[in-house]
Image (cartoon, rainbow, N blue to C red; front, top):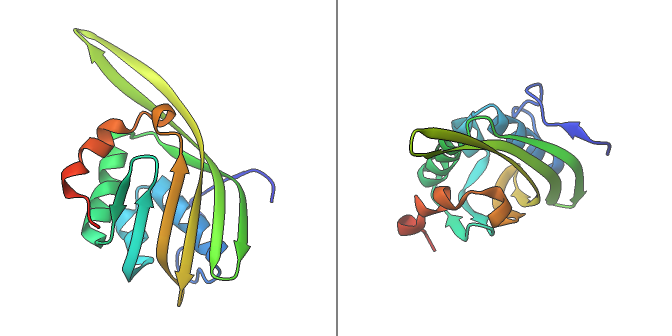
Length: 155
């Protein structure tokens, strides 16, 4: 698959193959449609962000995580480089771009973020039952996001 941006035209409705489900979810996340994304997860699922060492099994906490991520990085976007599928599993290799703004006294500085990573999902009956994200935590500058959830980690 050639490099392509995950775009708004990818519909969640009718997403049947694991690769299509994965690309559809990433497109919806780019648009901030977190409730629609959560609807694509089975009632019994595991979402694991390995870089941040966070795990969620509750949809409300997952929605909160996605929303908080958008608050921290309003301009974040994921561009899918390639996807692979095998049976009920799909893998997306992607690049995330965003900007982090930090204040030092009265000065505000914007730091560009570019991080490559991958997502692996497992699907059962057209719904995500397992989601795993892998990327470099330091490069992603998402430790502040992680600290918002450390007390509420579910196992």
